[in-house]
Length: 163
Ligand SMILES: O=c1ccn([C@H]2C[C@H](O)[C@@H](COP(=O)(O)OP(=O)(O)OP(=O)(O)O)O2)c(=O)[nH]1
Ligand SMILES: [Mg+2]
Image (cartoon, rainbow, N blue to C red):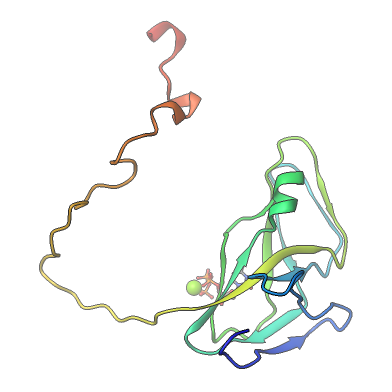
């Protein structure tokens, strides 16, 4: 499926399964937690996956949340997507967060808690210049193109008495 050679993978925890695609052609392989842990609402925790890999230079591992768990329980990854550098040989860990405001999330050892994608990445260099070329966007960003009028956070509205 990929032009890249099979990626060397070490199981630091031999009980963990080799990360698998749920379906052929899926972008990510699922990563499992090595620990039992309960994450309280709004809390985060770093969990091990028992897996280490040797990614080829010119690729990056990206750790994404699983959408089903996100929708059902509010489980996500704090630094989504997590970046696994090609030179990293340590255990892949996942910084999980419970976004649900009320309900704790119980993780059991072996649960599939996140997914790892491997992508090619450009290892560009940078050159300092005096000015940049002109574009139609220019320095406009952070909403400069409009269209979010109805999406402002409630806290951004003026106080009741001030309206
Ligand atoms: O979700 C993640 C993110 C990172 N890592 C590992 C692999 C990665 O190569 C290393 C460093 O990650 P990153 O560069 O994002 O963190 P940093 O805070 O900049 O640490 P460092 O100073 O080690 O680069 O930590 C993980 O295991 N899981
Ligand atoms: Mg870094």
